[in-house]
View 1 (cartoon, helix red, strand yellow):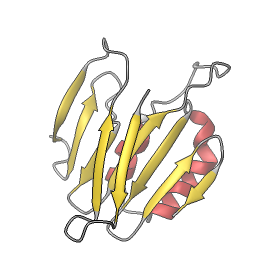
View 2 (cartoon, helix red, strand yellow):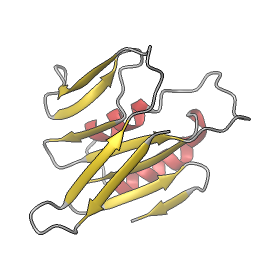
View 3 (cartoon, one colour):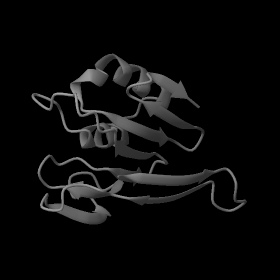
Length: 135
């Protein structure tokens, strides 16, 4: 089970504090957090199979983390990697709410997930199955 803990705007010096684990298939090759060669503004671990990530930040103040939502009845065929959601958000320049509205339209392209993302002004939670947007 993936777990994500965060404190937002609680500490006077640290607007966002995050603790997380990554519970994924151990045989899946990954890299630890580092600045990516093709985009040095992104600091994140890397899924070497699909080239996405499960948690990352960017130098322009973006943060995103994703956890799996296991649904035994869900088909895995022809689904995109959830790690691309994080990668795409950290690479994008659009507002968080716009990004999430676009994701809402395309959510069924991915297996189940829960998502936290934001920037220096806001933090959002999105659940694929509850189709919920919360700021």
